[in-house]
View 1 (cartoon, rainbow, N blue to C red):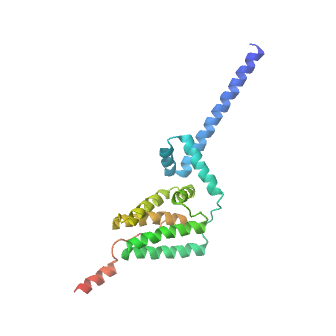
View 2: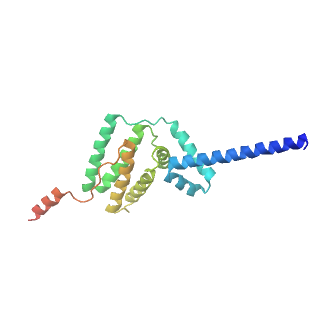
View 3: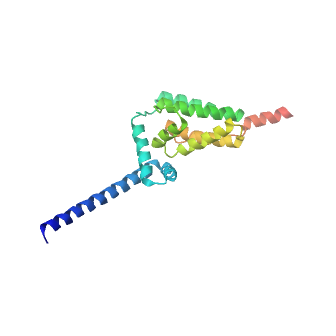
Length: 199
């Protein structure tokens, strides 16, 4: 075998190794992004229809959020927001529509205090998806219901579901496992008092 042929075979082997290394690296990156973004990865993949494009979009999001310097809430802020959320939940019993509006506003306020820019909704969702991929779908669902509410097309049950979605995101933003549940029904004490009043 002459020297020139040996060099050609060696060059082809090196190129093949580089291609294999790139494919493995791309596969590893996709797997890491899929694990990091969870359901958001699948949603973005359905939108783009292409793994490479999905990876690029999600990597760009992660890079953008890294530059934002997101910070945890101080214990004082966390306590203050926890109390405000309890008030919003209590408000739901008497005025579900106002409670959903306030929940949406409160989520935006927590995001702002933590360092997320509070601009267009889609940008907020993309930013949130980087650090809170398991609850970003809740944010989208809650906002869809809030928009329907603004058009007068949401039932009380829809509004209750919006509160459940906001609660999941809110708890994750505050670093809580699960805030208190939302009760759409009238508390027992009020129901008893109402029954007495009818006698």
